[in-house]
Length: 615
Image (cartoon, rainbow, N blue to C red; front, side, top):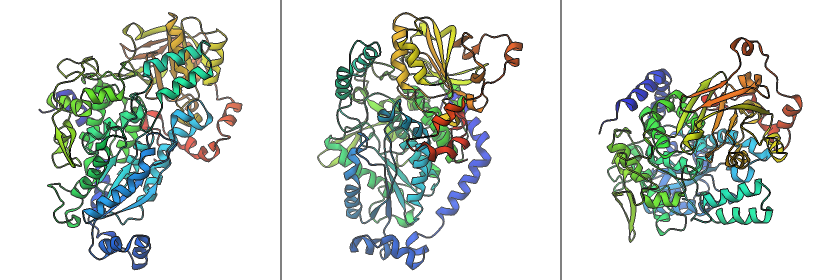
């Protein structure tokens, strides 16, 4: 089915806005595609260095037989449960490449931090900028320039966007992303949240809280809630950059290794025809990532995010990803798509199900099929598979040593996944808010309808610690809008403020009207408390949050799409901006390596511009 008018309109707007820089990008990609392979193009000493460490048979293949050579960029470390399984993937990939007459090399490793470990600590202030560090590390890895394709091994929050941004700067390379899957279900996300709220109230101690957290986060794989990491995987499926259906197969599943081998086969099927191995093309076509990720592909990713109630972080990350491909998107595009795209999934924090239940109900294959059939996605796109995006509307099944892909059928749990004809909501889960306080976004899919409009006096905090202290002192037991400023990219690197969720949820549970307004992030785990986040321009850049005073009445209206302070226009215009406290500036820049990121903080663009540090 052809895309509906609302999707077409946004896509055309993006194409028109992006025409000049997209054309420049594609010219660079095409110029690089037309070069000779690295083993023929580079000097003899360069070639000798590049392949000196290879086994002799591999060296012969790539230098003499001119076999295709796959770059492996690996985000492995075993602090991240989601990345721990990737320790053994490079050898598995190399063996499969050899079997197919090709070679593979670990081109490099990229850093990968766990936001769950650093949440609420100074280390979290490195988190957002780690995305651009990963992009640069990916570029360093690929800069050896002896590769015909690339496999990107990564899953979590900033890692996939960073790998994707880096890969798009090498847009001439066919690229396939290789995940490891989610951990098996442990303590439910709802039960975990209840214990956190009890701990915030002092009703349980550290031992009980640690036991609950350890029961929730208990083994290898991605965390089981539908946060940024799992949203990454959904978006990669919608962009056609995975082996279809590989996103949410558990690390210990028998099919996991075969899906990783299939990633090698997929990559080799889409290399430049001059470099393909005889008998291994499998009907593929040349699909460099710079051609795959076009405006339609980016819109497909945005639609998938909205239809599943995914992470708000992607209103920052996918702006940066699109820009890396010469494409300009903004929050108006997300907002206009959200008006027409239905919500098909209820996964925690937008429901009680975890990601394994989402997979069991039909997973990405069901969502993509429904969106394609109803005209919410572009089907006529280039992907890593010969069959195009329709291949991603199926689910993988292993039959002995052979993989096949079947139609997902009907939803196996309509409390988790619904067809496009009977959605949970006729609109997506994100809204744009605008008004005197700037532009911001709110994730409404998890917020009760009676909380979509909050009007109350505000309390202004310069840090999340200040809010916690006021909560513990009982100062917030009232209707209140909590303003937490100096949390944007230029102020302190825009850390996630997810540790504010439990105390605010407690206040809401007491019956108070509560909301959060901040120029920081709340992560993919933002939930039932209304939160106007990513406020732009940020306070540190002279944004209006720097004018707000304790007691000002703030109105957050998610239905009307407004965020206003109810102060007379003349008085508001005359009110001076306060500056970020010197002590806070000093504190934000010292310790835990934050000194090394000073240049990134100074040069960071606004959240709506992707918080990029490389433009």
